[in-house]
Length: 241
Image (cartoon, rainbow, N blue to C red; front, side):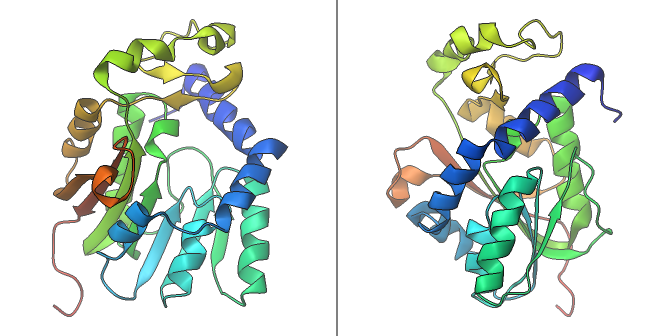
């Protein structure tokens, strides 16, 4: 799907937001915390070993954790600022992680290239349901048959959705875009984030070719109940099975 001027503007807003020095500093500090308890629970459901694509890898918090456990990791992100930090962290650990800056929703990889795909809290930065569906279709394409995709995503209660259109929303030049959906918001009037309700998130996940194996709450793993843990599987058998 070709990007309209409005969609392109929102993608650029996300890119600028994550290249902001304050955001780079924040995620650099967060790196040292490693995966949360909920994330560890989800990651520990993965098959052992294999090739991993970490989408929206940021400063490499998850990429490095998986590389330390023997996975062959490729990390991609829209922010060159975050990727620069990720490369430094992985280099200090003598890890052969390939980090690549990408934009838009087309993944620059071959069909059936990866055993595992990680997408932690990234769907909310893709504008419009149609583009999110296309992005998930790309996830499916680059996974090997039988491959696993694990996703996390924040949600808000249905009754909070109207609060997305706050004063920061109104101050954004994108506030009157025709493509905006209920739940779209602009942090500090600059970035772009789509707020999901649980029902909307589940609906979008189910509207793919993936088999849904897990849709859990982080509340069962030390969280506050506003994060969903998702495991998907591509139809087919893994190589050699």
